[in-house]
Image (cartoon, rainbow, N blue to C red):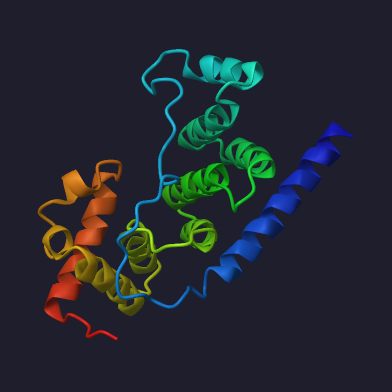
Length: 212
């Protein structure tokens, strides 16, 4: 019975990701500027990542109830990093059930889920999660253009990636016109992710698209 339940859970998750992936193919219309901060675009660190017993501590935080949601998100990320994507997906699904996408906490869950999916190679799934987060926003969050540009370029949708990157440049030209400040502007990104965005920047610099 437990095995059957686990198989059914996996099937439901797979179907859900397929739906998300399909939705991700159509992104919202570009806006001219993206100035708004998004308090949900944060990576929770309930327990220092270099702790030897990080998993045990996070499990205790979940049981105690304080910062349970943040602990679940961090634990899901640890599971992905340890090569346990099924467990990571189950933990994120649990977190998403308790945090609707229209809330700040719910958007935080989905924003982080997107990054873990991206780093597992599921770029369509990542883009769908980020799209879901954006739909829960009232303004134009500053993380959207560079993050979409990264995902779209990785998917081979290079013209779209350059269009989104251009929105970042229009918003903050001093920050995005070159890749020199990426380490400061994108401290939580991996070197490989910043290198990919630099390719988008080079394509933008070679032929900046006009607006609109």
